[in-house]
Length: 123
Image (cartoon, rainbow, N blue to C red; front, side, top):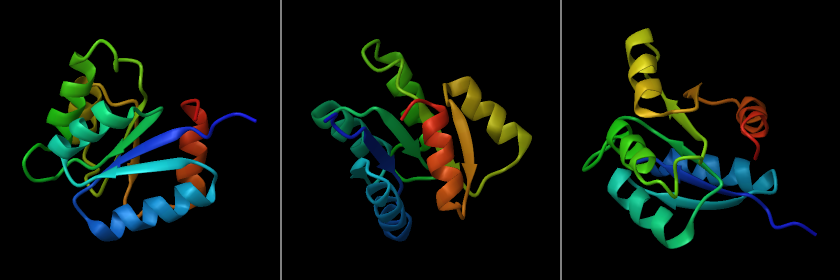
C-alpha cells in the first residue's frame, strides 16, 4: 500500500484550515498545516510536502513571499503550489504565477474542484 500524499495548507484563517483539513483528510491525504508563510516554511522544512496550498494575504510573510522562498530552495522547486484566495484580479494571478504558483483556486472553494485540482498536479 502506498503512503498518502502530504498536503501542506498555509492560511491564517482557522476556519479555512479546518475546512481544508476535513476535505483533504476525507479524500485520503495526509494534511499538515501552517498559520502564515513563515510558519509554512518551518513546517515544510520539518515535514516536507507533496503539494502546497497557500493563501496570499497573511501576516508575517504573505503568500507571494512564501512561494518565492519555496521556489528559491532547490530541494523544493518541483513541489506544486496552489493558491487558495479571495483575490481574483488578473494582476494578482499574474503576480502569483511570476512568484512560482502552479494553479489558482478561489475562496470559498468547492471540495470537488479542490480535489480535481490536486489530481491535476499529481497528488
